[in-house]
Figure 1: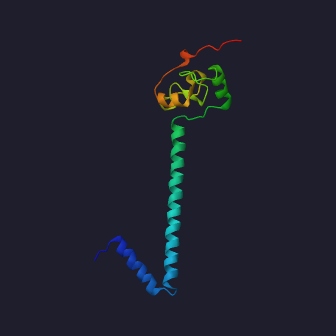
Figure 2 (figure 1 turned 135 degrees about the vertical axis):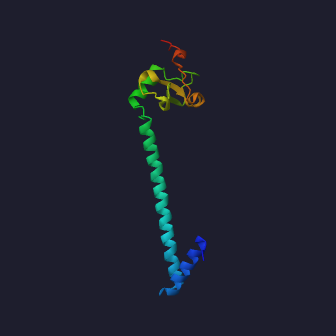
Length: 138
C-alpha cells in the first residue's frame, strides 16, 4: 500500500516515538531542529547561488566599475552638469553604448547625466555630448 509523503513522515515519526527512550517532546524538538537547520542551509545555498549568478553576469558583460579618477575627469569635461537637461544635482556617469551591448569604460563612451535623464534614456544609444553648453569665462 502506498502512502502520501506527508503520511509516510507521520508514520515514521510515530514509529520513532514508539521505539524512543526519550520523551516524545524531546524527539519532536530534535526533529524540528534538524528541519530548521536544513532550511537554513538551503537559504544559505540560495544566497550563494545568487552571488555566483551576479559574478558570472559581471564576467560575461565585462563589467568593470568606472574609477573615481575617471568619474571626476568626465564630470569636469562635461562641466559638472547633466548633458541633457543642464541640472547640477544627482549626477551619474552614463555609458553611451551600454555595457550590455558591448560598450566600454573609455572616456569617449561615457557622459554625465542626472539620475532622471539616465533612467529615461535606459539602454538606448543616445549621445548628448553635442548638447553641452560652453562654460562662461569670468
